[in-house]
Length: 331
Image 1: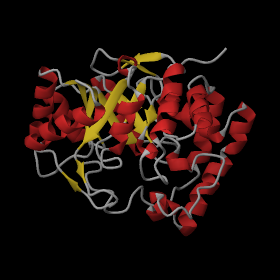
Image 2 (image 1 turned 180 degrees about the vertical axis):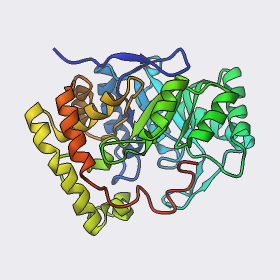
Image 3 (image 1 turned 120 degrees about the vertical axis):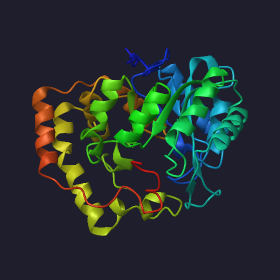
Image 4 (image 1 turned 90 degrees about the vertical axis):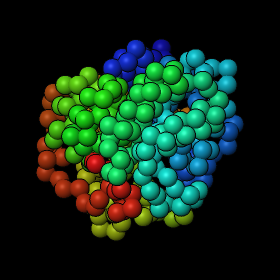
């Protein structure tokens, strides 16, 4: 019998989402060449057929290509999907350099453009992608709340915010989701953010829960020129070898559990808090199936203890992003 993921309430909203989502970024950019609309549609239809209904995109992924691909895939099935999209990172197509913008005027214009590309009357979950440190978060969230009042947005969220920013934003309008990188190799949110989101009733949405492929059984191809991991400090030289060794040390537990390392990684993330819903990305149906099935894996206290012992004795090397990519992170 095919496993169907549970549904959970999305934070401070009336939306019900699958216990695991699909990060759509890699369909359009950053991890190699974009896939075709036909391939993207097949992947998204398969996800829906498996019971996954939570799809994460952003206006800057492929300069709008990702939103347009998602719209094409969901034609005739829009009511089966919960679409999360983001605004706030401004960059030219094909360039990594960016600015961050959260002015009320930009919030509104970005939302209207996303609605057009998504071919929908409303966005289920609208995030600010990175915090604009030149615009008070109260002004950004205030305009987002007006979009909710107008019916253009159903719930709002924030990505890569500090605890102070999260509290201030939540006072303006109840947030439904915080999206931040989190995995066995990226554990910063454990210090304060996981507890705060639980306290405020906010769903915690980890992106890169398999650490951009490091927490999988295969090696990352460093020769693909359009794969942005080639520039990330964690994937450079000795840092990469160190981090891959940590990942490899976890494969014994995965083998004992009868699952892949990627599945073990997802199961570990989901075991940390009840309000966690990860959004691993993939372009392949076989990997999508594997990720969805990971939501059925339950780790015992003994297995979690064994994993934590390995992680406690290891030191991850390299920053998550280049200095350019760190703009607006934890702001």
